[in-house]
Amino acid sequence: MFSFPKDYEQGWTLRNEIKKDGIGLHSGLKCRVVIKPTQLAGFHFSFSDDPQKVIPIDISQVRNTPLCTTLDLKGKKISTVEHLLAALIGAGLTHVHIEINGNEIPLLDGSAIGWIEEIEKVGMINSTTSPRPRPEITSPVVVNRGESVIFAIPSKKLKLIGSIDFSYKAIGQQIFSIELSPNNFVKEIAPARTFGFLDQLEELKKAGLIKGGALENALVCNGDSWINPPLRFANEPVRHKLLDLIGDLAFVGLPKAQIFVYKGSHALHAEFAASIQKVLI
Image (cartoon, rainbow, N blue to C red; front, top):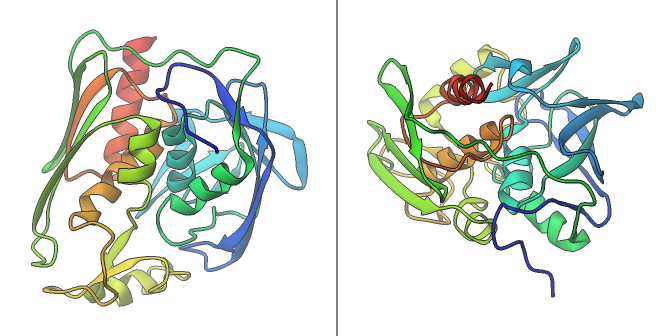
């Protein structure tokens, strides 16, 4: 029976490739990914029209876009990469090649669990090359954006603490902490779905966003209640915020740190990852 690694210290790649089709959240278009084993350390993208042109991910490729993380890969853009990257790095994979057909990663059910199930089907094997070293910070790193803040302090173990505060009664204030490991990620974070608000849907659609959004791929809040219950966790929204953070940290690696984030966003995460990168240089 397949089991995930016990920690993030070794190098792992897929035993076989994964092929997955789906709809992009913002474009509403069908897209496909083929996730392949590789002995190149890190996460790498290519496009189906030129699969041999492999581009390693880097924090400098991230572009601030509403509601998702978008990459600019030498002029070609890929949106909504965070859930897939969270699944890969959260599961303990360190060597992965992602081939894209389209300009967005399939949303699946709005969480990372669909990717985790695909990883379980094909399995994982130790890489024959060493993984990139995980970031180790020696002093606190702090980033603020308005009311939002994220900071990290040195730690031998990776612990994440997320906190959110929404005026919508169905969500309100939530806090969740977890000592991250592949198994804990799979059980406690991966199933948490993205969420949105009924009173914002028309505005987002007018802005050309969430064309692929549906009740099957996102939780929708209507103030005091959820339109499409049940929730998978009582505090599913804050867990999904940590899922987003984990995906955005894939650009620099999971640091050996305790990280606290209040009112996180993709822009905040990207600035934080860039700050970690600067500390390491």
